[in-house]
Length: 95
Length: 463
Image (cartoon, each protein chain N blue to C red):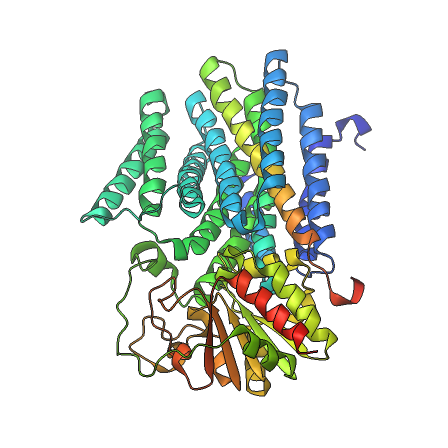
């Protein structure tokens, strides 16, 4: 169980981390980066899995199923397009 | 001393995943390490997912449902992600992002439907996360539909803001009722989610296509936040960390984009500028002077330094590969060729870089506004392809212009300017461009791909 105050600490530190990590990214990578951060929140998949695993009537299973489908789409789609974009960036040194 | 069996492998995998996410995002901040960055994050995601599946202890039916749902969502996203054209990338990102928001909302819905949460803080956080996730879900779907061309008009009517405010208040009321009386159950919770979904749609519909990148970025940040909130509800540290990191990073990215477009976030969301065609203020003096491709080619062949300014028109015409061919020809002749990109060129900041990278243009030839603006004065030719507002000197000088104050590329400082343009009309935003009528500017009319092909022939003919 994550205690409320501990959770606030995690929120705060993670927020600073996110801000700092991104602030040094050059403009040329902004689109892949937005896509990459989009992939990272695909971690919602583990939450959706846990939620569906605990479902105990039909309505919950329907909602949970939808949640997992959407989350898997977020994670897989986010990864595929980010990797595709980043793989194309080449410098003139190593053509 | 704890026994090994008490080690919580799922939690441990989440910790490793969180570290990999942060390091991965950091590696994405340089083009040299960027690919490894997304792969590191991918490993983290895989690890966390497998650990969750292995240790969750679900009933057989639920386990089958979980696997089936992952297969359905994963395969559809894999195929669509592999197929999507680079020009359509912004709406695809919007779509995947919306799915994440929807998933967060679904988690919240399950928590709230189940009810019986004893903890007021948990119920409140679940509700707020569900609200944000729902708005992000339906809003992102509208953003996708707009960029994909499924919705071509921006729906606006009198009293729209009143309606939006009403829906917001309704969502808030149902939300509070949900938090306060868990036993009210299904109807109220359903109304709450319906109101949140409608709000996302109503908020996004009036926003013009030009502002969509800022909106997508905002929804990306919101989804991150929703995931972080639901992570707290589920006691899932990986979700809290990853969601909050994305929430913070996305907020920063949204601010950077809005700044590059000379718009405040409030302005984007509530002022409907996106495609409100502002009549060109102040009559244009001078006229556009055409040039033949052969003459333009000779001019470029004997230049020392050329700066190419690509805009979205280049991508629409699919002329990136031709432009790179032309560039290689010129480089072989000893011409110093550079690319200058305004941050919002394309549909999204950095989108143009992706499109040029796809054509094979090395990233070290590409400079952004701050790096290259001083160099236009020493350039013999500035070649503008399918760009308009981002090179309009009115943004610097004409206070009456709607784009006054927007950071632009100083192409007007180059000795010669060649503009490749479809016709004599105005650009995307419907604003007259003072650059086009300057003395040193020549217009090369035609489709970007055809025009660049002609330039290639002309440069080759120059011997």
